[in-house]
Amino acid sequence: MGAGERVKYAHDVRAYRDGVVAASRRGPLQSLTDRELDVKRVPVTAYPREAQRRVWAWVRFGPEAVRVDARVVRATPEAAGIEFRAAGQTLRCWVWANAVQPYDAG
Image 1 (cartoon, rainbow, N blue to C red):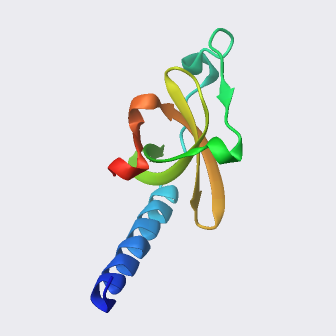
Image 2 (cartoon, rainbow, N blue to C red; image 1 turned 180 degrees about the vertical axis):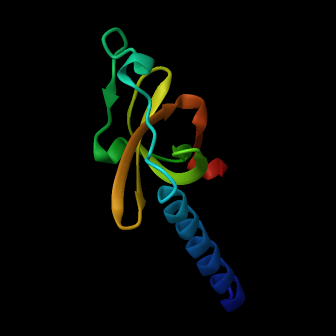
């Protein structure tokens, strides 16, 4: 990676982080409810740190959707419990499985 590519990459990373932080200021992080997850009927799998997959996931802060770099820390057959960082904080929420894409496909 040449110097110009490193500068572009650093700019892209900064823009991504700024976009997530800006979205987080527009409203609370939304998560699926226990009713949507059907936790009384559907099993939840919790993954140990070494088994957590890195993914791109669509989340909502208030009305705004933003794509984040996250880890799947738990799952049901239809949803993913994700964890990601924004503004120096670790945030967690549940999203539908189809809102998640493998990191290497991103």
